[in-house]
Amino acid sequence: MTAVRAQRGALYAGNTRAVIRRGLLATRSTNYLVVVSGFFEPVFYLLSLGIGFGALVGTVQTSTGVEVSYAAYIAPALLAVSAMNGAVYDSTWNVFFKLNYSKLYQGMLTTSLGPLDVALGEILLALLRGALYAVGFMVVMQVLGLNLAWTALLALPAVLVIAFGFASLGMAITSYFRTFQQVEWVTFIMLPMFLFSATFYPISVYPEAIQWVIQALPLWHGVELIRGVTTGALSPALWVHLGYFGLMIAVGIVVATRRLRALFLR
Image 1 (cartoon, rainbow, N blue to C red):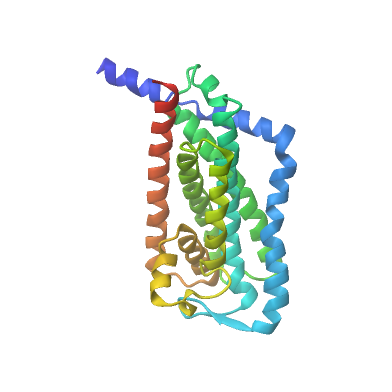
Image 2 (cartoon, rainbow, N blue to C red):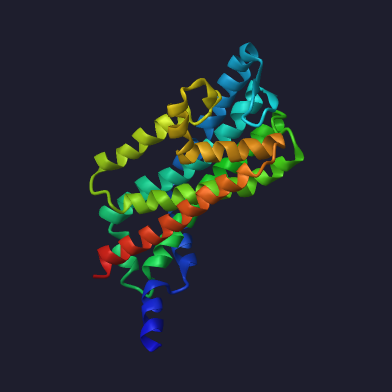
């Protein structure tokens, strides 16, 4: 029993807030301009394509059969993309630098902190960045009248789940990277996800085989989840999307914790 307690203590000290506090202080002093700039990319896409190009497109039918304006169609997708971008960039590039160059985690793990404290702290920091992007984008959607139902209020917790999933998996994958070139593969993967996950047009335009590939991507599940709640088209399929991200979160936390333990507590 004593050995089990000691093992748990080595894994988790219950002080995740110390990791979060350190990250917030570092962001406030050096990286706040980078964080702020990341918010504007989906807003520019919405204004240029949703408002401009949308005037030519007219209405679009969602996967649940709801007819909406083109701007209202792509806005929920860009909201999911905003959450993904904030979470992924924070859990990959930032984590990679701390892991391999600043040696921050080695220092943390020489204290009473355990690998689960560090993993949860970094994942929650990435979650916070994704949530900030998403909240700002939701305000833009509300101003433009693109939240079409009262259920759009559910978009905020849904966005947190999406950001949590991407942050967890992002940190787990980053723990295996050794060079900046490997980290760039994350951007290479995110770009096609952004373009093809029913972000700008329904996946029904693709051949059936391609549709199956798209439906296996995490961003597609996030897009469908947000689009369902913002248009008021609630269906049992939303639970499938939530379950997908629940699995991402569980796998990401377990893998990231084990990797930190293997790398620094041998």
